[in-house]
Amino acid sequence: MQDKKEMQDKMEEREALIDEVIEREWEQFQYVQNEGGRASCQDDHETFVIMRKSQFMNWTQELLESYRQDLIEAEAAHWNLLTEKYARMMESTAPERYAELADILPKRSKERIQMQEEMIAQQIRWEEDFAAKFPGVASTGRVIHTSEDTPWDTSIETYARGEISTYSDRTVGLLKKLYDQMAADHENLSEKTLRNMTALYGYESLEEAEKQQRARLER
Image 1 (cartoon, rainbow, N blue to C red):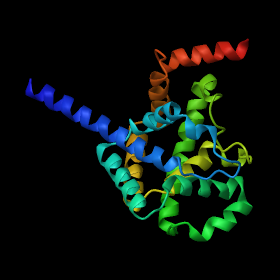
Image 2 (image 1 turned 120 degrees about the vertical axis):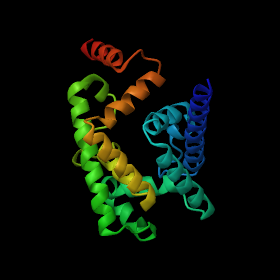
Image 3 (image 1 turned 90 degrees about the horizontal axis):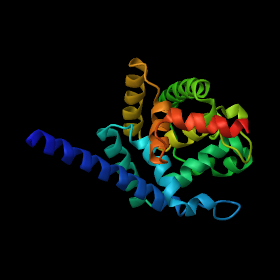
Image 4 (image 1 turned 90 degrees about the vertical axis):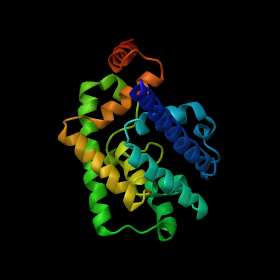
């Protein structure tokens, strides 16, 4: 009985931590300056929560705590990690604008960049496998590769590169550990994230979401 209560307490603590991380991100997201004016997604809290929770549900407690600390430290330093993320994406989607911002962004070591690129390469493999298995659901999301970027459509690869680049070395190390463990266990992190997402959107399963999306595409 005690073990069951302890497990419940840990689950509630984890849920609260995920919620806190999301709300800290959301607060920073509100201050992201979009060149075309405020983006509609900055007013869509429900979708933001689902997207971020789908990802964070796969993270370890230690990784979540580390990223929370990144957000706290950024706030204390008056630095916006969400603004940094979108600025880093511009290296591919808006290179001229990125060139104007590059000098103010935190510098990353060669070793750090190499680690990030290994992680991104693994994520791309997961995304490609997922798209082959669930093409209907995959068609509703971003394109996969940086080579497919346009000024108005950012790929999963570019988004991942922008986001991972904002993390502290501590957080990146913990995320790399998660990636390596999932790869060793032959698990697909992208598929797990989409399973979380479709459940949060109310689907019975990812397979059911795929079936419905394929039916829509065939109309």
